[in-house]
Image (cartoon, rainbow, N blue to C red; front, side, top):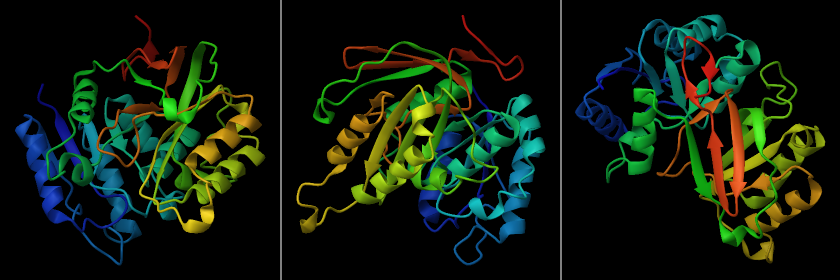
Length: 314
């Protein structure tokens, strides 16, 4: 199914232009019409153009009429402009069928959009890192992206890793809002109007380049703020690219997860295939989901999402 994909750069400057070009070519090879925003390769300091340039790019993405608005990359840049993003225009674009897809720094955009309008966007790939990967895109990521394009994706599933201890008990979760994304970015929104006050939701989290003690500090910030206890479940994705040091003396990611579980009544599920890793599923930020656990197998279902009629279950 050929779709119109709009590629824009709301965050950091595209430095790996070869990966960007590979990503664009790959999307075209899949049969899609790819429209690259006029400022996609702009550069100002570390950003893809100054703040006004990137805000204008978001406006163009919203006005594009594309089925998918896909970020070139994450990095840093969206928290700077959260007070100027045209949320109503973005929400209107979503209601007309444009799916906004991204991750990492895009977490700020997604949660601000949810807080301000309730509109759903998708945690998923970026052009360079994912579609432009040297060895080609990951099969599972591409299949999930294809499901989104065809309107087929109705859920995801994964197996809890045995290394993360015994499987927590999870009562069937029904009608809970899925939200979250990158932990560092999400924590930077606490106490602002851009932090979604989601109660009884399913919070998913991932991060990259953060040592386990820093992850614990951020998780504790969410816990002390009362955010974690208000959820139906906390789902941990992939936490990657950090270096342990000798004086950790056994303190590890497992330590952080075990302690979090001991302090929360809310189930903490691990192993979600999402984060700064090639194999990533697409997740609807702001959509209602159902979740069930069968042994170590987790099922998360959002049913068929129709942009024009809200969502309904078949």
